Image (tube, rainbow, N blue to C red; front, side, top):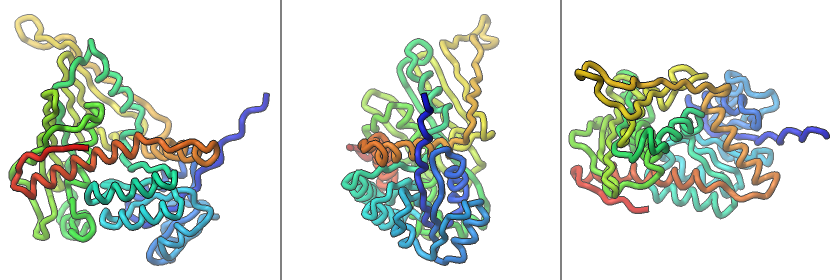
Length: 364
């Protein structure tokens, strides 16, 4: 019996030459079911240089505008790494041009904008996914299996997450993530997004009852958030906290506490090594005799992967697009739903900060 032919690769266009687009371009080319057919920038010279520098196929077209990418009939899907303030316009336009949308995070300035993007995709039967890469690492599924084990982990009690990095004065002065007209959410959107997603993931995407930003958030002269934190209180008494910052050493931590167990991971956003992701668990831990230690000792789990997590993200997205194109299947609604829930909590933290750190109720 003849083997089935491989799926037709999903053909990507990229609008914008942001630094993160270099990483995702590599991922598109590493993924077995995708390729790049077009890149657009505000100048054709920049687009052509980007394609050359990042090893694009010789057949990939360089355009001197974003519109040209969206008008290219050979483009099935677009990756959008533009500043957050531009997402609404270009993601909606991409959907109107019948392109599936892989959208860089933070996905929008607020949930109202995101709802417009999601409605445009849904009305045309187009797949939407945000580019939160760690969701696609095989480690994530293995960690979730531990959290779902009633004997080893039990009832969820608390979650804490930190994402911070300190890129120095040049970053703080010039990066678009510090410009109120480009990425007005600052550290909350760029780093806090990951912490909030981790908290929701640990709690099966249940939304918190209230969100309260912690006092003494830090801002630059333009009013953009440099660091902030928040506490999230859930209906069943679960408490979660997070801290995100552009002013502190690179840290990517998640700690999840259950009645019977505990999980921690030190590199949940970008694994320290591309092909392996570690995490650590404690289960049914007690003090040893005379309280001179604990037993059983924590265990380390190493989860290997042949493809980096960003390539697995592209592979999953392309698989969903392929099923729509080739088999006429509907879109996968999981991804827009968890994206919207993440944005709702981002909005609540921002509102709490703006209202003097008051508790904000969250409703879907």
